Length: 629
Image (cartoon, rainbow, N blue to C red):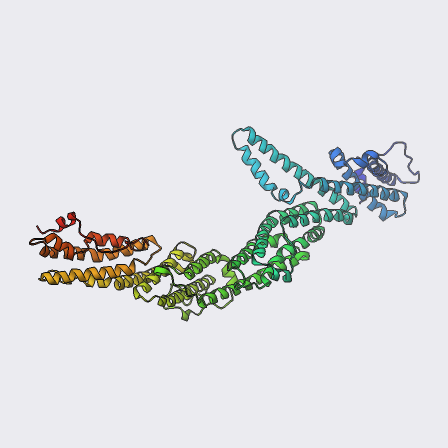
């Protein structure tokens, strides 16, 4: 403290008029001595008044709650006293005034320690990390309330927000005033001891309430997947709360209270948060290292690992910001280590997934050539994986992708020169689907009827294309991939229709104008009826799960078959109507009307086909419509 500063304090220092000054002092020395004396006595007046050792009132009362203006004066007087002590130490370390000042400072610091502890302890609700971290949100909410029409409930809510925000702000300001005063007076250690003790318990309690528990690798290996899954779900919620409120709020509070010292802020926050943060970010590393494969756990494990990876990666900027101090870099290192471990485990599970498709040896024969369970499960898995494409790009970066040469030419529209992370991810998904389709192609051989084989391929490829279209897979694989595979599905469908119903169409004469005897006409009708019954008997057991595809196939068959048959009936049935018993003759030869054919075809793939004898006689109305003019 400079002499000029001492002289400046003379105007505010209380100097008793009856206090004797040494006669040997020069006027200048006398003035400075009087100022020092006044500062000490002025400080002593308020410090002694709040001495917990001599005042019962001071012992049970909080200075900052009882008299806030006086608390601010108390802080100012302590600062003045410290400045005076600095001057006395430099000039006369053994002076009585210095000894008195030191005693007063000890009393003042004891008082401030008590105040600091009381404020921290009694205002935990207002210093809750969530409250601290959302102060800006409260301010925004308060502004929004002021813009709304008058309403008692809104005013009440607005007043409540204002109250919470003001109390929180005032408490934080008081803590900073006390901390700055104690640190400037050389009592930083005592101040930090109180702060660390109370605020560390807040973080530890928060971590405990979020159900983040210490789990050893050995314990994790012995746990069932169901138990691990529950822990992961709790952890995911814990990360969200921790980064948005718990650690964020504590960092804001610590930065505010110890704003005057970067070193103290770092030391304080590092000590109170390190243990809880390491426990939080160490959990994924332990789970990933447990090496639980898809062989002894649910295939959904990969999605839990992806969720954990996304939780850390999505909060990485916050992690770097909140745990930015060098002394707490171990938290950033642990979070990064968990990301690496999760990446390795996820890549391993993807290899297991592909291997599982290739090694699938199930002998399941889906009735009616429907969609195979392998197709359903694989596509469900891939559509969910596609939702994580943003993190999968990072996870799979650097790991060798499938050889492009293994994929059919023009399998999808990705340039050979395109080696971007997104194109590599596209390659992986395209490869996995190709592995599935190859497996399904082999499973089609389990059906003895070739037409059902093609219907099986049609149904399964339709399911694949449909799942791609309705998910993020479309963004990855592109429209060209969808178009090509849809065309392939149409080829399978056409092959099914040709093999299943081609013989029925072929049973009718190609040249429908050629002259035919009644015997030849009868033979054609008989041949058609037998072919249709045989085809329908086989195909009525088939299914097409997708209703649009089923309708398209049925309409295509009907458009091909019914007009030809109707024309044949119209032009050839007249030979049986001539003479006696014409109607009986006709009904014995023509067992199906064109309408019967349409009805039978419309019942295909419904599992509710016409049962019993397929022979249906013409109704009289049908005969009259088909009689020659």
